[in-house]
Length: 430
Image 1 (spheres, rainbow, N blue to C red):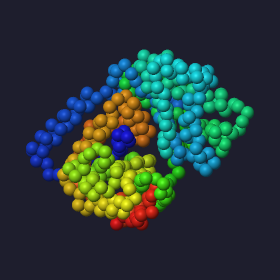
Image 2: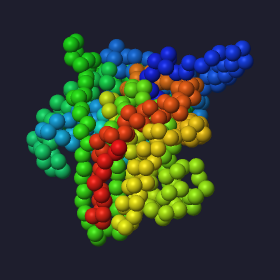
Image 3: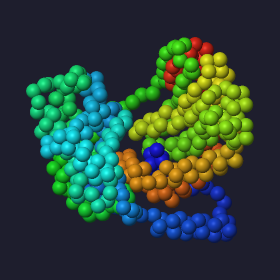
């Protein structure tokens, strides 16, 4: 998730206005030199664009394994009432065989190379990726690049006599073809790779197997339908469940919104806790202290989920039905405190923890590949770590208080509750 935290902010917003003394200038110069030195030690993200608009982005770290994947700018938000479910259905079709290989042949080929194929669909993106030995890049090209998906969809499964598929009766051949031809265009796709990757070789493979994808026609745009957040509530009371599962959120910010990084810092201040971890009264998070000392919940996790034009900022927790009202009051009190009384020490700790977590989550070729693919779709570039570090460091206690007031105070909440939730009180954020 770290990759999705890189935001396209104006550089003018990165530094706060402070009096500049001679010592401060020296400190700034030292910090800049340190960042430049770090940047020199980070592998370059190389980017090439095919004539059809498809982008190839790689980071070569020289290790013997690699992760390669296709990041496609299309997910469930691009569906409509008629073809609902088509994005996820296409993802699963990727592993059912190709025009040249049966499903068994494909699985055996991948397993014999010691490779691993996977995919996932989100609201705004579809991803197909593979982990393999770098030396198998050419040998397993059609398999681990998942390139055959685009051709198989026209050559094999779509050429049967059934207009609808047995497992998804409402999805027809026409729906699948229309979805692919509309969204699987060159400019909407990034071929990302990390690990032991030869950029020129991957560009050549991309041109060979994906160069035939259509570019975006002149005048056609690839855009999402605008969304409108209103707040909502869903409760499903089930006393047979031993614990209540509840999520509480307000509208957050989209990827490119400058408020996203301050909201991430605020999210880190709220934190995450599980009773099995043992920590409680001696940790820094106020909400953790309340939960542990009052035995109010089994676990909670704050979240900041971002999309292109909006987001959800909130908390998910699990507790016994008797403690629901008390923990809700603790959450509301903590959210109010974030708007007006959060401290400098909390913000500093959260900034350091956020930066640490981001770096830890980039440990390995797969998360780095995800970082590259997602950022290329969201921002059109990969934001370097030292730039992100500067953006986080520029956040102040006033910044956090301001965004919390803007997004939390007196805003309509979204509530989802499942289990023994009869004691869940009406919720308002004020």
